[in-house]
Length: 50
Image (tube, rainbow, N blue to C red):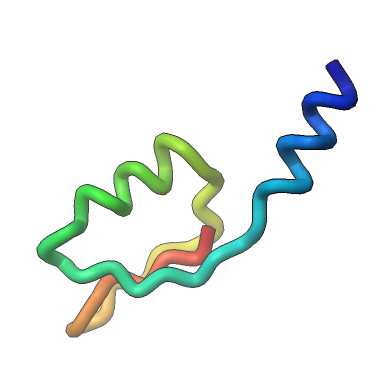
């Protein structure tokens, strides 16, 4: 099990995303499938650090 966990962790990386408000559903998916570190709602887009 430890080997599986380590393999999965090695495939995961941090991302900085600019998500348009028209696709705000993607923010929910970030919370569902990843680990959201911060969210900043700007005038032009939602900035997500995950």
